[in-house]
Image 1: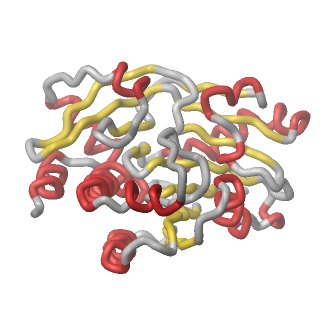
Image 2 (image 1 turned 120 degrees about the horizontal axis):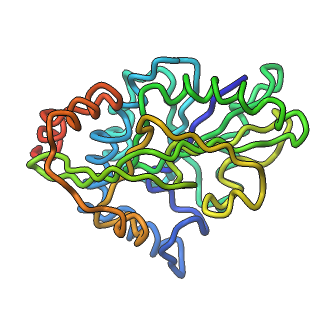
Length: 267
């Protein structure tokens, strides 16, 4: 079984975003604003990469999709951030329709000889527990009977945090919810031409059986000026970071306040 993750990093395709633009040029102008990209890089470094870097099960692939038009200095910065993560690879594509681009990013990584694939997506301001891949393999065993009958099944970890960050550090809110994109995955046959990005996450339970897990927090969802999701903002009520919360972020997500402050204080 394979585990394959996808992260879109300011990829300028047709569709796939809440905010619409009339032309690709307008979309690139929006995505590549200096202040927006700086924020994306900082959230990516502070929230997304620590958990990916420290996965207890290292047998997975993490594709970071960006556009061929991403300015060179930003592309080099992206590559440098991923240099120490052997499972990560950067893919640049021209503007394509959303599902076509996602298929070109994920399907070449599928090896049918390895059986089913479990696919997950992470936005560039979200993160996962360091045991995420490990727990996906356990969930595969739980889901096996359903999978044999249905050929696909979704795995949904429902506990996590929303997070805001600035130069003073991170503040979080503990949340319990279903079908949010971080810590949500699908398992399907290796021959399937669909990907995790073919299914709108908020109605995934209408398209396949979903197995939901409670328990330890498995995701962090970033709240910032550009994530554009009012539902996330509705949940977020930041509280004081006590020692237990700091320890949880450090031990379960590989995120430390000192690192967050360093990243967000950088000029």
